[in-house]
Image (cartoon, rainbow, N blue to C red; front, side, top):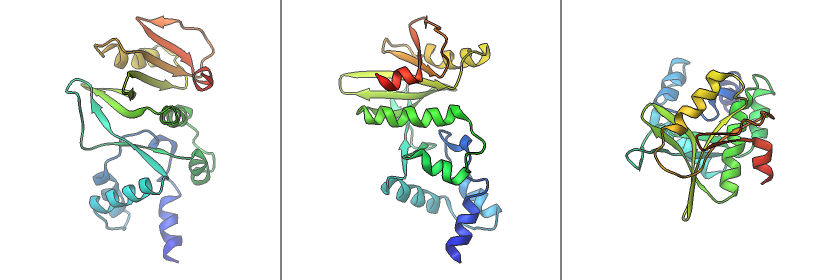
Length: 194
């Protein structure tokens, strides 16, 4: 009975596509649960997130300040190890392919033996900073950049980085956009098949 109640509080709306790849605040999660009658603390939420990570259900991506060159201590992002978990919890509803693609790219970068973090540069964010001992690359992921405002948003973060490491926008678009000031736009399928 208790497990059933716990599952029912998680299932309906707590797990939505827009939570994948978003910054998570354990304080906000604990405040939400408390407001729904499940009193808890942010330490408890942190413990549960740690257990989910230890059980290889989720991965934590730390945030990295690209200007200060240091990892930030709070507001990490979490990605699912298996998108089937998301599908089971959401029943394939509310499909936002941008977030699903972001999760897939995160897993692929890990598979390629990169250390993956989320980049922060001022008020802007870079989806992924992928590093190995001998290389580094930056990635933005978007379902489509056909819309100019989306394209400019994705480019803005990458253009604000003042180094010469490769920068990519990965998208489902099949249009050849070419490069934008050295930023390569690539179809996500081509990236995955590399």
